[in-house]
Image (cartoon, rainbow, N blue to C red):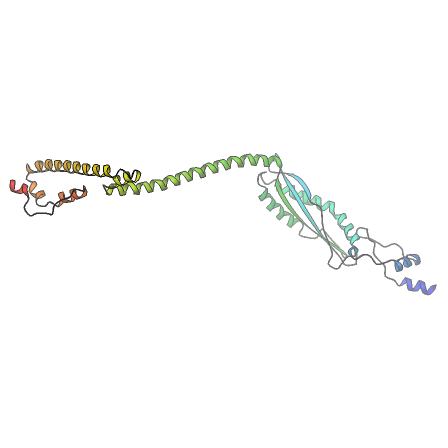
Length: 296
C-alpha cells in the first residue's frame, strides 16, 4: 500500500473549474488522488487553450440623455472579452473571472456613453456615435484586470440611434424638406424645358425673319393642300410691298431734290436694287441711262 500511496502522491494537481481568480485547490489525499487518477479527461471544448478564452456579451441596450436632457439617444453596446492565463486555468474558471469583472465593466461603459452623449443634440446620432466610440477605445485601452496569472482585456463598441420620439419628429421634418426639394426640382425642370423651347423658337423665328418666304412655308407645313392660295397671297403681298417701297422712294427723291442731294443718291441704283431683291421683287439688269436723270 505504501508503494501505491507514493505513486499517487506524484500525480499532478488540477485547478478548480468554476471559481473566480484567485483560487485554491482542496487538500489532496489518497482518496482524492485515486479519483483524479481514474477520472476521464475533460471534453476538448472545456479545456483552456494557449490562445485564451474569447467571449462576447449579449447586446447591452441603454437610453442615455442627449444635450439638454429633454430628449435621449438609444445606445446598444457590444462588449467583447479576452482572457489569458499562464497556469492552465480551465474554460469554466476563466468564465468565472469574466463574470466577476462584468458588472463594473458595464458600469464604466455606461458612464462613458452618458457623459459623451450629452454633448450632442438628439438628432445627431452619427456624430455622437463616433465620439462615443473614441472615448470607449481610450477608456478600455488597458486590461481591466492583470496579475501574474490572469489578464482580462475588454473591447466595447457602441451604436447610437434615434429614439422613437425623435425619429417621428425627424420624419415629419424630413417629409417637409422632401416636398420642398421635390417642388424645387419640378420648377427647375420646367425652367430648363422653357429655356430650351425658347431658344429653339428664337432660332426658328430669326430664320423666318431673314427669309420672307418662311411664313408661307410654315403655313404650308400646317396645311399642305392650300398651295395655290398661299402662292397667290405671296405674289399679291410682294406686289403690294414693292408698290409701297416705290412710293417711299418717290417721297425721298422729292424731298432730296429740294436740297440738291438727289445727285448723290441717283448716282448709283445699288441701294434700290438691293432693297427690291430683299423684298423678293424681280429686277432687271442695271442700265447706264437712268430715266429720272434725263428728266432733270
